[in-house]
Amino acid sequence: MSDDGAPELPRPLPTVLSAERVLSTQLIDVDRDRIRFPDGHEAERIVVRHPGAVAIVALDEEGRWLLVRQYRHPARRVLLEVPAGTLEPGEEPDRTAARELREETGFAAAELERIGGFYTAPGFCDEYIHLFLARGLTADPLPQDQDEYIEDPIALSPVAVARAAAAGEIEDAKTLSALALLGVRGEPGAPPR
Image (cartoon, rainbow, N blue to C red; front, side, top):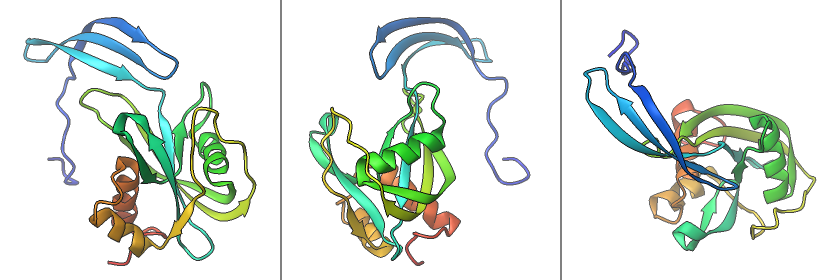
């Protein structure tokens, strides 16, 4: 542990000996990497390369979260989640967040603040989600993406979001991460402690 209590990362990091692209799609790429650890042993890693994404905790004038119900095919279910979306090539995360908020909820934000971020599944994927807090919402919709079906947003108090998470009604990792991060930071939109 470092002096500030944060865990120290191993140094030096493993060396990438080779990288082979084994699949390339419109959304992701898959690489097979051969790495050498500092102690000399080697290993293979399959890595999903993702352009990154954003997730937005959108608070209405009453401090309620706007959540969307969206069909997620890999999960084979409709999930209750914060609005989110993938970064377009060359697009900055704050612009992606502003666009996705309008597409998925029909609202634009007067205030859009980056409050953190996280790797979704760093054991096999490099996707990083930038988390934003949106306030000062006004109606300003954009058309949804053609490959998505998202129901109209629902507004839940921070306490109701926490209860839904505790009851297993929210199973989306980015929404659970947003709830945890807001809670530890004491941000607006966090449930009371």
